Length: 125
Image (cartoon, rainbow, N blue to C red; front, side, top):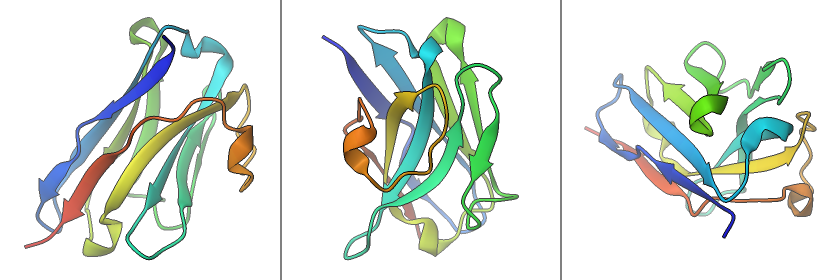
């Protein structure tokens, strides 16, 4: 069964770091761009970062630039989101999702083939 599984969320103090993982099983991530989205209570889902399939080009939301780093390890069929200097406003459920090859930046969430179940990130003192 093809699925994505996120892990690595948790409770962290402001200024701290977390590394999220998104691991695929039942299919290979080689041909997919991988997106990280997040959704906070009462807010719209927003794109955080994306990495393309072939040349691993990366794209970030303004809120993530300079603090978050997306990377991929195709041998492990896993994509990571390293989050540094976390802020309370980063609190959300984080999801990974695939789309073919390139990062579209689309808000049409039906174009994303696979979604993980989400992992909670809470930034609080």
